[in-house]
Image 1 (cartoon, one colour):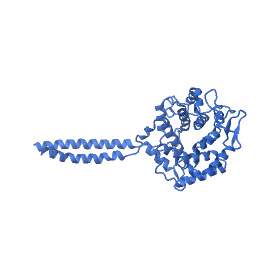
Image 2: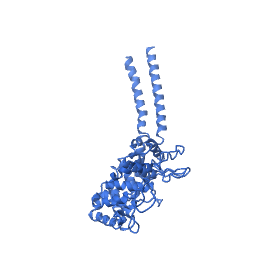
Image 3: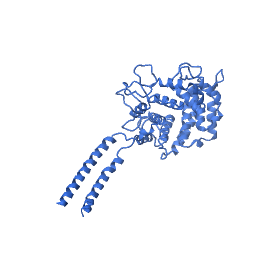
Image 4: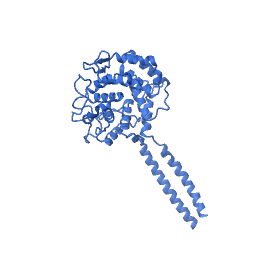
Length: 380
């Protein structure tokens, strides 16, 4: 009889704990869910394309661009969050902007549209005619050097550079046309832009290396499947890239990131510089000096208001989440093997979790005390 009464007393306890504990599962969201929701919130309901910032119909500066659209799709792709995305209008918009890029001489836009169509599995929708237009469009900005190297210019009126070459090669890569390029001559153009310091210049005939040019050069060779040619210089290139690493822990808001200007005393780390460095190092098969420091620095840039990632900024300056920065941050964590960090809860979840935990402990303690008291009364 006593056991039966004890069971009767315990059942309400189990019920109460279940009701109280259930919200723990539902309270808050993970960093990954917040980031995915932010990227989706930048999608325009009419055109289906993505803007750099959360869409606001009253702000004409928040226009959708091929770059912001490719970034948002790239981020959602890495988060495996593309499945529920409506892409019919997006496909139409991308095909239209691809046409504009070709017709109005904007190589980068055309290349970004091709990559975006790849993410939504719509490369076939470009059609043979337009694919040939892109090849002709690219050929019109190609130029051989006196040494026989082949590079491409961002604009028909400019000299060929690593940057123009990158966007042409990327377009060919996602169209699966790499074999139609003069891979050897293009590779020579890129490799011969390498300086003794370990950094790449914008072209074989230009002067001064940069982190940006180094990233574009290495990424281009990756698309061409000729990265192995950098093997003899891998250590030197990695050392050059890591010269941009902010290793001074006193610079708390910059430590772990990379800067474009390492020469100045107060080094200013940015997500974009960190993206260039981490991707380049990853493609070389090396890594950042302190993985945990870089990963934690990236997490510091996640915005608790909307869940997106913002670029580093001076103290007191408003930090606005961007689809481009959010993609770069997700990609950085992915390349570092730290993408699982986004599974942790974010925002004010932890505060509410502890409140619920305290409530559960109080109820549990009170209920156990009640059971003991109840049993004692029965014995009496």
